[in-house]
Image 1 (cartoon, one colour):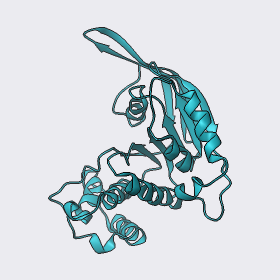
Image 2 (image 1 turned 90 degrees about the vertical axis):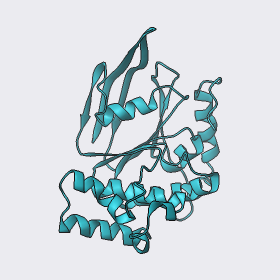
Image 3 (image 1 turned 180 degrees about the vertical axis):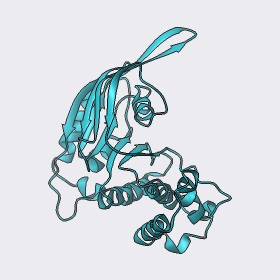
Amino acid sequence: MIVQIKNLSMNYYTLEGELEVLKNINLTLEEGTILALVGPSGCGKSTIMNILSGLIKPTKGSITINGKMGYMFQKDHLLEWRTIMENIKIGLEIQKKLTDKSLQKIERLLKLYGLWNFRNNYPEELSGGMRQRVALIRTLAINPDILLLDEPFSALDYQTRLLVCDDITKIIKKENKTTIIVTHDIAEAISMADKIAVLSKRPATIKNIHEINLTVKGEKTPLSSREAPEFKDYFNTIWKELDIDEKLL
């Protein structure tokens, strides 16, 4: 067990009064597992991520994390005036952990995932999909045990999104990183995740947790997973669990 969440609740206080966002969230995550969080817009998925990363403190409950977190946001947040290599090094520079060993790891990642020849380019010269790969490598460079991905593909067009989702999942699996991903896309969640937690509307509780087991010919990837005979059944089940007035696309 690498992550454990017990009875997590979160209230915000506004001029209009108290707003209950999360209510008694309980989750456990084993090492190497990919967990997807799905639920209606505004239900508190990103709030869970912000609590896990330590950006905010919960109102109630406990979190046990056995490892270091790496957080990848919706936007790649690459610095346009720095080269790809300089962007990837920035986390290590801030932590004062830029060493020969860490530079060797960055070199390995860039070569392994097809970005070595672009290391001296600037972000504006890269496609949206390549920028997301750079953002992930930047996150991996600090050697996290757990990855938090908050809708990392939402800014991409549909075709690019499918291809980048495939790329990113392969990288996560190859690097054996425990991952929590927030997405509004049910198909994306099923194709990527080992487990899916379905959240209710606010205040969010966990309606169900699905263990995803797909029969795939050859290598299991997000693209091949969509062809599995069980895929449609998972999709229909999860769709029905979501609140009808909140459309997930």
